[in-house]
Length: 182
Image 1: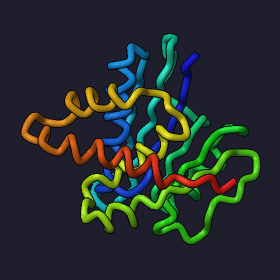
Image 2: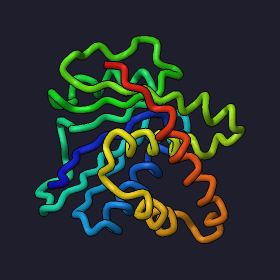
Image 3: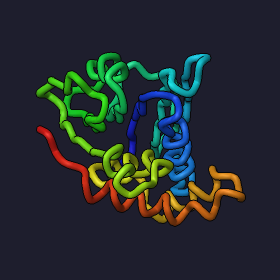
Image 4: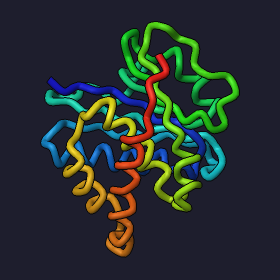
């Protein structure tokens, strides 16, 4: 049974909300019940942003969560805020770029993906979030990649559909570079 409660958190401009939206649309394409709830400060780009996504085979009673199966963390402030909210046995995926105090919990699975570095090396900054999503789907394939492609088509304006192949390449890169920390 699929039931995954996820928080994705980082700075505005990192594609946090888009990553959550693509994951949510992918869940819809897979006939799952879905909740997508964004949260961001008034400053948007550069301020903190997070989104909770719930993917479930059963009805979702509330989109409001206080603990998570998975946290995808893209900055130190988000790690400080959400590391303790991961359920024991849950998963933390983070990009070490900008993390000065790495995660310390021993009762969760921790993975690292150097998405910032990979996006920079490929000169493809715009696919950073898809690299992170690819890493997540490698460690927890809650949706099929074919449904992610359908989710991209649904969530991106048609004028940006030419970017879908690059986004799919980002998924592949993320799946190849994710590393287990503990």
